[in-house]
Image 1 (cartoon, rainbow, N blue to C red):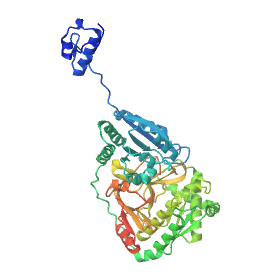
Image 2: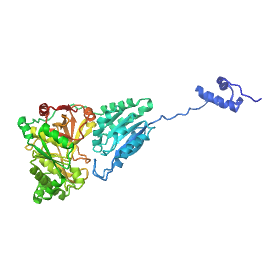
Image 3: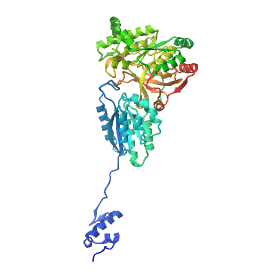
Image 4: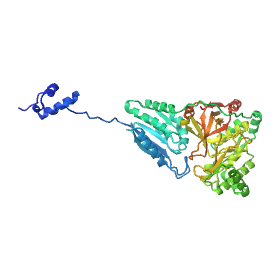
Length: 528
């Protein structure tokens, strides 16, 4: 008789001999057994349910890079592919709960927008700032609302990373960061993405990034510094001298005419704009013998001279003579040059790095990149302390609770022209491996004061740190003095403003800075 078979209770199916079951009843019985969690079937054989592997968190791994056939940080010819492979391999093996989806953006904001647009299915972003591609759009990559970890490749992407970090952290998105010389710290933070598959929200994962970074940042407990009294100077006399002081700025100048007017109104220092052709003409007239003597003076006392063409050393001497001539013509005690643009675009035949170092040793000012704010800061604090400033591109290293002040121009007399002279090496300019510059091996164990004086914004950005030693890396700028930040390193990094540069002086200059702020009605911003 055809029709719907009767429903047989699962208990009866389990009790019935297998030989009496129809095929349909047998299949139905098996299904019922599985539904009830029953194991013994057909004479006691055990059947295990299918086990599904836990889902991995899908993370877009974005490498922000730039072409390496030009002068860049870390340096021309830097092997981005090798670093990319190193990071990918390390994270893949160490983060089993994360599925990485690597891609690149190459100094083009449209590429960042395209990555975000195509990534509806990803759970989060890991953004590695590999090199100094200023047009890579970190704000777009970190602004999706998905948990995002932004990572600095130290001495590679540090300028872009530090320039944008305050903006990234103020967006109200689940974003945190890693800037460490220890790649294990990157691994430790990246592992936290796996929390997304355990029910954690984006903000909870970002908080886990933050907790992990903080645990990996050691506390600095030894603040004993070497004795270093800063000689007192007559402040009234120093400020009067500043009102008779000029700085030549060649080939442009950050902040332009508006900054120059503000600087003169507040401090009395006058900037004199000069075109490249005036400096180039002075270079062509430089005394060859004096240029050779200048080169011999620097190489004669150097611990190491490496990779530098002898002709480049004499060209550095000729540039020093040219700068002196231009300064004398305009009655100036300082000079700042758009050196990178001037050299790369063919306006200048030599880097001014060695000449700048000489000026700073001699109590004048040689300032990099036509950065008028830093040149002004160097001039003002040198006038009131007698000590030279070191303009730098800072890098954050949480592995040491440190900041690294890096540049290819540095003094070798950090305590003033009559003070101790530190050892140094003569090397090429780092970004393009041409010209001549120095690695100054600045002394450790001293308290330093780092600042930027901003007359237009009527503020002084200020922090202090204890020098730890000199970083030997061949990447990026040659002089790299490491220092433990006195205060909150996280605050310093996340509230960075006024561009990348800072100016560092040896000594506790807090009393002088306080006095300047009071006299000029400037706001003191304690960065750390």
